[in-house]
Structures are given as C-alpha cells and as structure tokens.
Length: 244
Image (cartoon, rainbow, N blue to C red; front, side, top):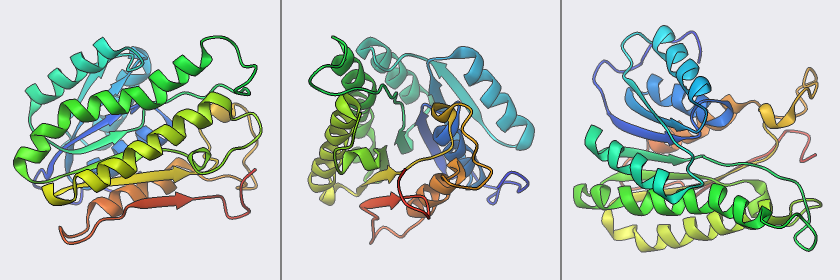
C-alpha cells in the first residue's frame, strides 16, 4: 500500500477516523487516502497526530488531511470534534477506532478502570456517532465502522473492563445496524485479533505470529466499496496460527 499513488483522481468523500495517528487507525487512514477520500483525523497526542498527517501528505501529495487533537474519553472533546467535522463537510465514512487497553479482572481491577475503559472504548464511539449520524441519514448514505475486538466476542483471562467495553461496542454496532437498515447508512463491526501495534511493545514479530495493521485496513476499505445493495455486517480477523 505504501508505494501506491491515490487510485482515484476525484475526491470520493470525507472519512472521519478517530485514533488515527498510529496502528490500526493510521493504516485505515492510509487505505482511505488511496481510495480517494479526504481525511479528518483525531488523536489525543498532538505530536503523533501531526507526524501521521505529515507522513500521509508526503506520501500522497494530492491528499487532503486535516487534524483535530482531542481526548475522546471526555464528552466535551467528542462534541468539539464532531462540531469541527461538520464544519469541514458531510462525512461519508466514520471509523470509531479510538481506544485503550488496560489489563485486569472485573472483580479486582483498580477503582475507576471500568469508567476509563467505557469512556474511551465505548462512549467515544457512542457520542460521536450520534452527533455525526443525522448528517448521514439526511443524505441517505454513509458507512460507520466500529473497531471492536475479538475481546467483544468472548471473555478471556485479564480482559476485565476492556473486554466489557468492547462487548458494549459490539452491542451498539448490532443495534445501529438494525436501526439504520432503511436509512441507507451501513454499519460494520470489526473484530481484530492480535495486531502488531504499540500495545505489544517490543514483541518480536519476525515470525509473523500476529497480524499487521494493514490487514485490518484492507478489509475495512474493501467493505466500504460495495454497492448500496450489500453491507458487510461483521469482519473477524485472527492471526493464521490463532489467538495468543
């Protein structure tokens, strides 16, 4: 993907991507640039966000990449970001990728960890979607991608409030899909297994034990390109050798 130029000369629309400065979010941003979209990227780390935007602009000089720094665990920041997005234009794609992982067990994890995981991993997507969705509905088209996790599908050791927050995001995705069928707006829940991002620290992936972020991006962009008669409701991706 890195060495390709933008595939379409004409801008297809606007893709809003949260957590877009690194890892899965950045790979998805690159994928939508290649597909011909303008980007509205959000991250809570200003330095990482500007570095990501500069990288995309250098690789794809024709790309339109705009940034907004916000901590989407705070509702006021979600509202500010949504208002800014709507000032830029009508979003065609929304990728709710903002998230964080803290290990623990629900019964004895530190006080406040559940609230932190829910605010970051669930409420950020819940509030942002509710603020941007009316514009999509009024236009009769749009596609929402919620980046869940295989932790949304079953409990695992040490998952705790992280897993619970991802279960909530999965439930939100299912309800949205049901509610929006007649509006023309599509909803896709994405369930990645282990992906080589900063969360894995200095993990040695020379044996390709876990996936790369580009794997997720390719599937998301492909799902966005279907005709109006079809929607990919769920995307589940795991390493070839299975979960760790």
